[in-house]
Structure formats: structure tokens, C-alpha cells
Length: 362
Ligand code: DNO
Ligand code: MN
View 1 (cartoon, rainbow, N blue to C red):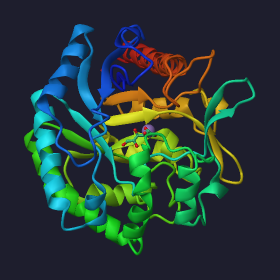
View 2 (cartoon, protein in one colour):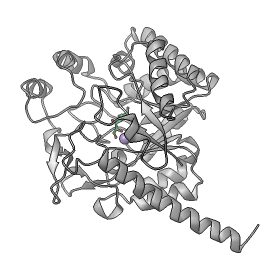
View 3 (tube, rainbow, N blue to C red):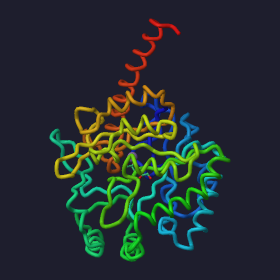
View 4 (cartoon, rainbow, N blue to C red):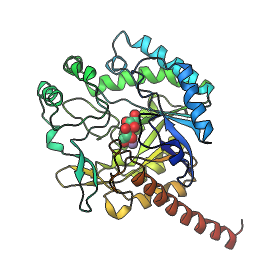
């Protein structure tokens, strides 16, 4: 398992590269040009600039998260081809700085959605919270009003210019079914996967977060059966998954251990984090420890260890603790604690394996 840590870039993150390099066992940053609009080709000089910064502290750039997919591609509009060409040119450029994995998602309109970014836990820390009732049977125009009026719904990364287009975006998605999304995803994969193959890159789709339709918009990266269907849609080692335990774990019917065992060869990148799911479907993010949430993180680490997992791993979101002011979910302290929990579990398993080998040399 190769540990990496998400970094949003100089001036865009409260965590510095010098802090990241002091977290034990972290070898690289998970990065992106976050201000580059979806659909645009990433400029090479800016890519090289990130490489220079990472080089200076001895961290690698192997994992990019995310190269975002333009809505016209998800919608299957005729304009999609120009955005796919830009995407392809970005993949080729990333290969030039030896990127190995590109994470992306195929969620209509929104990336991850929460209804409260600072919900208080029993211990006084705060964490990202999702209240299901606020996102079902919502009238899109009502939603747009709520967001624009700076209401209770919090969508990180939603700049005012983009919000203004939300109503027309919802209009375009009217009548788009799950089948349409599958077809449009297949079209996208057929175009980009051969390019990834030629460039030694594995594409790794992130599951939908939460893994069910929200605001009446379809979502398809939600379950084991659908991830299986996804892998068959374009059957290639370059077509992989970012297996995110927190996203999939928000639905307790998702058996993450079974997914790890089934998809092991197609998981170049994993996000490991915990959530506590309530009976009514609401959930809150918690510390990584198994006992603190609904997702069995120690069991997940064991499943990866049993499979001899050699892919990249990052702690995903963390709580906000010890008074830290940071991007929602992306503080230093709780994610660093998460890493130490993951390493502790992994190293204990590794010790047991080595002792077994010593006892029964093959
Ligand atoms: C949620 C996070 C997401 C993720 C993007 C990937 O679990 O990991 O923000 O980064 O959805 O495109
Ligand atoms: Mn994730």
C-alpha cells in the first residue's frame, strides 16, 4: 500500500507541503489544477510548476484527483467531442510528468454533497453531515434559490458564477435517465481508455457520493453490481476504480470487503474513511477508527492486505479537531491520525504474515 495525501495547492490549502512530508509514510501528493474549469486542457507550465514544488520536498505526483468531466460529456451533447479531445490532451500531458493514476467522477451537476459542513460530534469536533430528507423530492428551482440565498445547503467548490447556471443545467438534465448516463459514460471510456493505455496511466472513477440519486438527478456509480457493469463497459486494466469506503459506505447495503475481493485488480487507488449511518439514512463522517463509525475500516485494511494491495491509498475526509481552521473535511490533524490508524493496522498484519512465513518457509 502506497500512502498519498490530498493537497489543493499553494494558497488554496491550509496544509503545507512541509507538513505533509512529516506525516509518516506519505510518499506523494494527490493533486489537481483546481481552478482549471472542467473541459479545459490543463496548461503544461502549470503542471510543471506543481511538479517543481513537489520535487522540492521529495513527494511524487503519481496520483491526480480529479480531472473533471464536462457536463456536456455526461449529457451526451454534440459538443462533447471537443471536451473529450481536451481531456485526452490533458492525459497525455500528465503522462509527461509520470502521472500513474487519474481519479475522476461521473456525477451529474454535483460532486460530493453534504447538508452541513460543520455538524458537531459528541466530542466537540465537527464533521461533514448529510441529512437525507433535504435532498429527496426537492424542486430544483427551489434548490437553486436555497443555494443562491446562501441557505443551509453547502456545496463546496460552488462558485457564484456556476451557481447562476444551475437552473439551466437542471433543465438540460430533465429526462436524462440512468441508461443515458451509462451510454454517455461508455462513449467517454471508449475515447479515453485507449489513450490512458498508451500512456501508462490508469483511470480510476470515484463512486458517487452519496451513492444514490439526489435532487432528482440520476447517479450510477453506486453499488457493487454497477461497479461490475462499469468495469465491463470497457474491459481494460486502464479502466479502474477509486474505491472510496466512505462514499460507498453511506449505503449500509454496500459490502465493501466483497468489492475489494472482487475488483482487486482494477483498484489502482483507494480512499479509506469512516461514516456513521443512522437508521433514517442520514450520515456523518467520523474518525477512521472502526468503532467510531459504521464502516469496518480495520476489516477493509485486512482485505487489502490479504489481496497484497500495491495501489495508492489516501485518508479521505477528516473531522475538524483541535480548533483547526481548514477546508471542510481537509484538515491536517484528523487525516494524519487516520493515516497512522491505517498504517498501524497494516503493519500489524504485515508482522503476522512475516512470522507465518518464518514458521512455514515455502
Ligand atoms: C469524496 C471525495 C470526493 C472526490 C471526488 C473525485 O469522497 O473523495 O471529493 O475527490 O468526487 O472526483
Ligand atoms: Mn472519496
